Length: 292
Image (tube, rainbow, N blue to C red; front, side):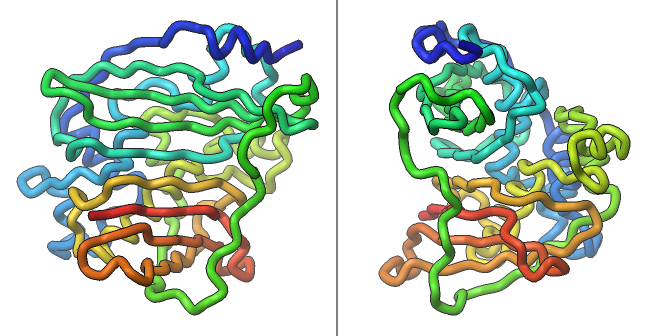
């Protein structure tokens, strides 16, 4: 069986050292769409080193190296075809603000393996800490087609969550530049699906698609800028499920629903992201930003 759940869960953590500085943060922010208009003070906090604030989703690329999906496939007990793999979701919990410059240790392991019948889901958790203690925890959810059916635990529902049936409290535009995938990949995800038209065609797409984690980062920026006045330190948790592709050059619409009883102190914001030119076709679903 290509996935040996017991072996994957029993595998020791993979430990690696991370290091980053302001250049990595600036490149990431530009890659997720920060910058325009270039002289706007609200954008300069993401693009100018003298006033730099780190968006928490930078954690997904801090230190470079392969994304969580690829790391999950290198765990003992997991031997699957990359063509059958989808990045299903991403979660992040921040324990302290991400510093502009840092050195830290990341420890990754498979914490769940779910049997969906015709597919499997792996959950890779990574805990990151520096000399002062824990910094963040992230989880990458990896969907593997054709690898279920061994009788294991089914786990939580994996269907896309519907947005609230009420009008959103706020709506933000999220444009995607033509070259955005080419810029975002410089932060470490070199999958040719996002750059090579021939490879994308072989994978069944009309043209290269945007990285899901690029949309993930751009969406968090939209929420922080719209609801938190750019205060990145207020983000506590963020999770999203990837339910559709984004093509460079498209426009996205980010709809936000505040919690009814949160008030000014914070709470979970529900978010839905759709592709405008494709009748708001869902891109991210089950998306929640919890802030304080």
